Amino acid sequence: MSEPLADVALTHEDVVVNGVRLHCVTAGPEDGDTVVLLHGFPEFWYSWRYQIPALVDAGYSVVAPDLRGYNTSEKPQGVDAYAVEELIGDVVGLIHRYGDRGDDGPQAHVVAHDWGGAISWALGMFHPEVIDRLVVMNAPHPAAFAREFDLAQLKRSWYVLFFQLPWLPETLSTMDDSRAIAEAFRGQPTDPSAFTEDDIQRYRDAFSQPGAARAAINYYRAYFRSIARPMAKNALPVVGRFFDLPGTEEITVPTLLLWGEQDDALGVGISEGLDEWVPDIRVERFPEASHWVQCDAREAVNEELLAFLA
Image 1 (cartoon, rainbow, N blue to C red):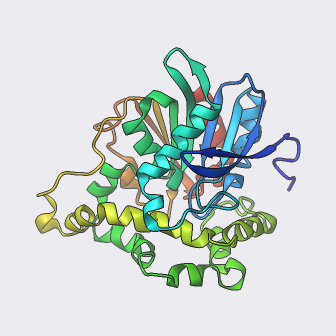
Image 2 (tube, rainbow, N blue to C red):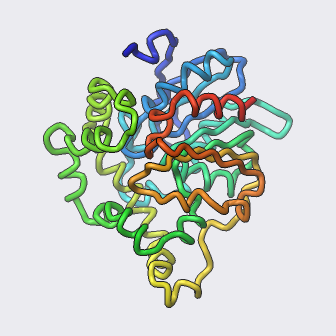
């Protein structure tokens, strides 16, 4: 299988936004509409290797950062450094740095997966002015996640609880050259060609960067601190009806949700009934794709992505 980025001119650079240094990969014409690509856990910018060439060929200017804490980006100390407010601030800073200058200020298309999707949902709620169009892949809207958080979803999300332990998760996940990370990419994809062994080694190398594992897991620690109470209530049907769902601020930007149905961690129901919180949304599901939908169903995802952004 050929290297998907072999014919793409990539630029690697470090930028400081929101007080943190982020490693970014850029590609495409400078005068093209800006697309910011936000990866998930346990990934880095390379997760978009199948989308970057398609976007560049279509004339877009692409920005793919390593989120704070990942790969070679800066790794601030402490759980609070990974609160969603900080993560949103990073993306706002990137769009101000790279985005298209319009009458209403800088804007960009935002395309996100997994944790990048969680950040982008919040970005759409609190900073819609910086988003032109929003594409989210296999990342739960927080209100839908709360609605669907029953005992079955609790079993799917066991690792979130495990990640709350001190030091042990990062220790185990980085043992034997981050073998656990390799198994995560080998175990779930439905397309055997989605991840080559060379790809998987790149993920292992990125996750093995000093401090990267702790930073990545601190995302979950910070998030759990903010939603533990309502999540616990909804897991218990007797009291679940007595609280307000988190993340119910309406997202008004045009939104596309792409969802691989063979997701071991997230039930399909999370992708349903979102109109209440995102009125201008279209949902496309891929029955044979896994959580790594942008790799498993890359051609179909690229087709949907380009049509929506155009």
